[in-house]
Image 1 (cartoon, helix red, strand yellow):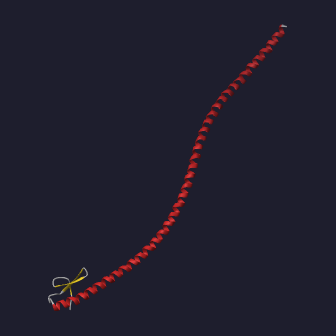
Image 2 (image 1 turned 180 degrees about the horizontal axis):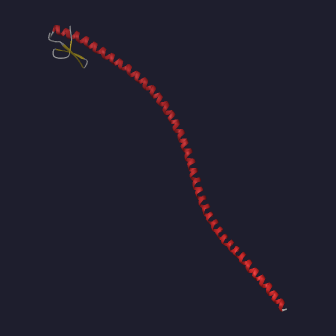
Image 3 (image 1 turned 60 degrees about the vertical axis):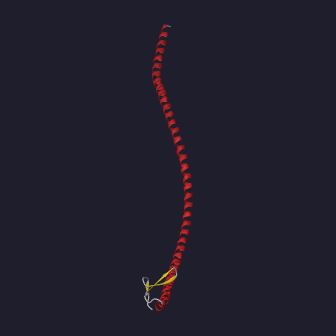
Length: 166
């Protein structure tokens, strides 16, 4: 019986040694697993924080993109309105240029008419003044050599004015 007890003890010792050896290998693996697991948990947490930050950035960028798209649509509409206004202004400008050309022609015609009227008036005044002043020179004052037309009146003078011949 003692022998058996020793055998059991030797087997028990061998089993204990085996368990100790296994627990050392398995224990260090389990410890490594838990350490690696903690590392993974930490890494996952860091990645989750980065994901949240990226999602916030994405939301901000998406909002900015939508605002830019909306502003672009508004700008395109305004550009179309400006193009339409520009088209209308170009048409109005063409009409104004045509009216200006017509007005310049009318002004030139009126200036010619004024010049002709002034020439006719001066010719009539000179002819009339010569006749009237010649009559006055012959009948009243032989010193009269000049005439003036002032305020639509003929003045015969022996001092100044336009010289005339009888």
